[in-house]
Image (cartoon, rainbow, N blue to C red):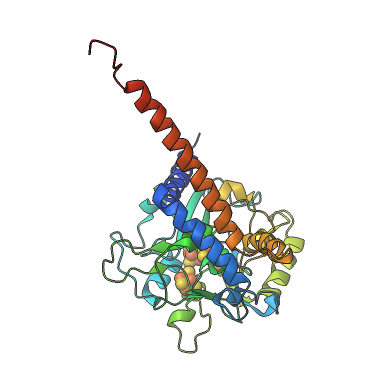
Length: 339
Ligand code: SF4
Ligand code: SF4
Ligand code: SF4
């Protein structure tokens, strides 16, 4: 088993532990309450929940990036440009340092994009190149689960595509971190005064016109990242696949994953070999909406969820009390005994 696979697994375990920690017992009840609240919000017109239902209005025109992993040389210029444009803290090691590739990394609150290295050629026509580099950042989903999970609308999708963040109204609940299928949002745990959720915002948050201007794409010296409209980039990706069947696998990552994303990937090898997660086509919000709509259709209110939850908690409480009483009865001294 290669070191890169081991590292990948350890990162996944870390992420799972982080989630388990978050799902600590005292928080399950709060999460359940929030789900019920979310269901209620979903049924209300004009709520924050409605912010995410824009993806079907012209996704072809959405700001988008196409990453061609067969071209990426792992120079990390994109990381550097992202750091500079978003005024992030300088990393301990310079961006020219390639030792960072020894472990597989995920975006953090201090690095909104990272490049990872995987052993093996990027494509079958590049047999002399023995490594593949893959850039990772928020995918700017067409139907983003983070937006759906945010009950106050602190995360929202704009008409032209980017998924942005409003720190002023964020509750710090971090449901977005749990909801994201790509495990992207990071949190400023060490910011004691006002911790924020951090993720790539397509540089729209720092641009003068509030639109996407990805510094990473502009900085890439080999045009491994192309910025444009999603529809145009899909056509470009298909043209490349058709023109070079020896180089590309006939699949665009992000075309359909979780309902489609604004970051698209063109690869020369299987996605699971280069850290791109295998995900279903249906977006998580669509699944939860189907459940919510089912509930509303039959006239039930989210209070039903409270009722079911309350009944469950009451049942568990009664069982625990009964067990406790039985244990105490067993321990009671025999009044007729010598002790
Ligand atoms: S990748 Fe995650 S954080 Fe980014 S838009 Fe999709 S769900 Fe939200
Ligand atoms: S679009 Fe901007 S924030 Fe996103 S990865 Fe590129 S440089 Fe970083
Ligand atoms: S700047 Fe371009 S070539 Fe360099 S690591 Fe980033 S995507 Fe790859």
